[in-house]
Structure formats: structure tokens, C-alpha cells
Image 1 (cartoon, rainbow, N blue to C red):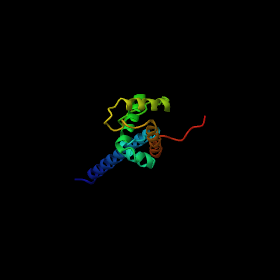
Image 2 (cartoon, one colour; image 1 turned 30 degrees about the vertical axis):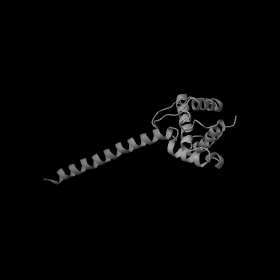
Image 3 (cartoon, one colour; image 1 turned 90 degrees about the vertical axis):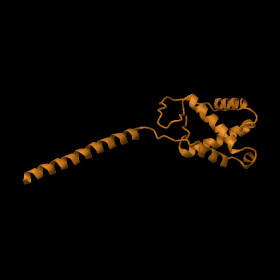
Image 4 (cartoon, one colour; image 1 turned 180 degrees about the horizontal axis):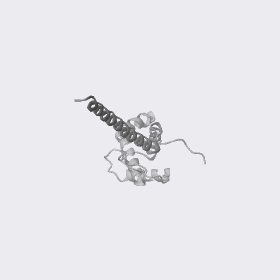
Length: 155
């Protein structure tokens, strides 16, 4: 075999390597650019939220309620947000860019109404309105800690 044959083989090998690198670089670059243009996704971990909220409630309240009670309120809160179109059970869902206002009073009334409908022997049934408000306030602290809620915008 002649030297020109091996030169052609090396040329094809180098061209294949360069082509592969260019394709990979373009793919990675376009994916990175697409992800950079999207808003950062906050992932709400229910188990972590229940622990965090339970740990940040007052000692008087934690003496009266359980983590299961906290879980019921958080589950109802998330169900309310899903109905409003603000949350999803899957991280890949696109929720849209429309402004959705979730009035605090409406959210609280919805959750309290749902708690009134559960049987007395289940967790969450014995919670008072003040207990639910305290749980939701602590949950707001958790949401701030994971970046799901930003700072208050003036005006």
C-alpha cells in the first residue's frame, strides 16, 4: 500500500473527527441557548416542604398538629394551584406566560372549604382556620427558599 492511501485515510479520519465535533458543538450550543432563554424552574418537593414547614411552625402549634396535618394542607394548596394553572405535577410541563392572579383570600377559602368536607377522623380535619393560615405562611417561606416566589414588585 502506498503512502498516499494512508494519507487519504488520515484525511478522512480527521474530517470525520472535525465533523463530529462541529455537530456536537452545535447541538450543545442550541440546547444551552434554549434552556438559557427559559425561566428557571423551581421544583417543589412535597416531602421536603412538609418537613420544612413543620420545622418552621411555632412550638405551640407543633404541639397540637402533626406532619400529616401539614401534608393535608400542602396537598390542598398544590391542588388549588394546579386548578388555577399555576403548578403542574410534571416539571417538563409548559405553564404559559400569562399573568395569573391568585388572591390569598380565595386560596384560603378554597382550602378551608375542602378541609370542612373531609371526615373527622382523617388528618387535617381538626385544624382551625388559624392553623391553616400559619401552615400557609410557613409554606410561603419554603417557596421563597427554593426560589418559587421572588421578591415583591413595587406598584
